Image (cartoon, helix red, strand yellow):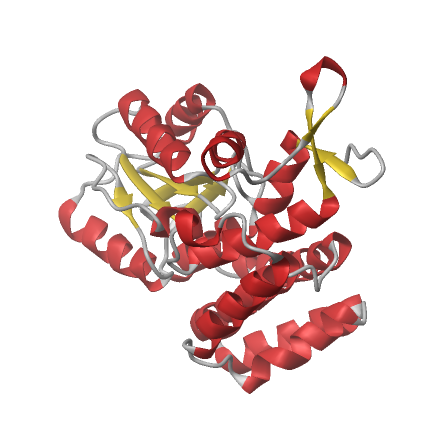
Length: 307
């Protein structure tokens, strides 16, 4: 992280807040906030208090408030609005809070054991929807409010990755269909949503190949051919601007053969307000199971090899 006396460059601010560089520049011109100082070569540097404000603003916009209503408000005003928003939402289930405590007290092994126990008790489907999805939300909210450090978020991600990878390994079937290729586009560094999608698809009998994060479009096309995939699944987090999500999906759709299905999910997709031709947008994880069944009812999978 590039810092100068607790000042952050624009790339770091984008990564830390999930607000795109172009958006930051537009807000600066339109609303007079944020107010970066200028360093050598006219580089923008943002003071830490403004970064904290931007995190709160991002959270409020994610809850439906318009930028004009929140950009430039002070921390106290933003926190009041955030409290109002949260009181209007259903309270988190009590069984989630012990996991947060384990994260904040840095008990990695205990967290992994507790997550594994919950998986065994609930089964993979309920574990993903009733434990991991709300837990992800709580962790994200705590980070946005500055109540959770980056290393603590990483600790959580590492433990849940280990638990889910172990669960997925018991479900693998290379000969099943559809054959699904999962990845993210360049700029999307978050992998947990991708892993949750893989777990759900595996539970419904799909054969999954995961490329990890930040795969260029042409490499996706090459991988589809190499693995003879039927479907490409892309994951987008809140960190990716809405227009970038739309443009990225359109580019991938154009590059893929017409018979390859393109599905997209994640919190970044939830903000899309327009239909993207040839792209199936997913809401909750359960949508993936429904989509798999629909695909099986309407599609003929390609053979695994060419004789």
